[in-house]
Length: 154
Image 1 (tube, helix red, strand yellow):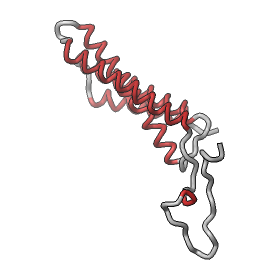
Image 2: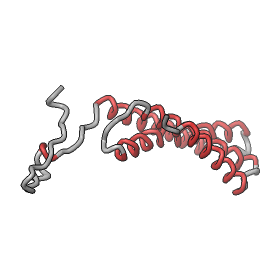
Image 3: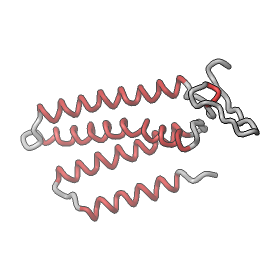
Image 4: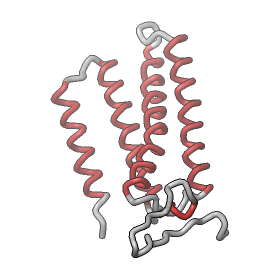
């Protein structure tokens, strides 16, 4: 375990900084294997979802089969949500100086679910001919307020 985790070492007081190419120059922890595998798993699931989106979009016509539009909307929402989950987690991971805190994955999954729902709703509104920028801004404002309420640190 100690060979897998590199710890922070302070710079020497006389001002000679270590070379940035040495392992001792790393001032944060490396990513855990489970986090890396989770990210790769989400990206793989997103890839499968995008392949299903491409399959539905190229083989089904929503004007002929009305259910195809809703299936496509759900698949697009799922694909976008699965793609954004690891991006949200990696953004927070980088912002926290490569330290994982409890709840980071849950927060990233919740935000990915919000993105998934919003994308699916936008596609369904577009299919029904009811999409309007004011409605889209209202939905985005609702999601922003809901996420801000849920993300408050206690």
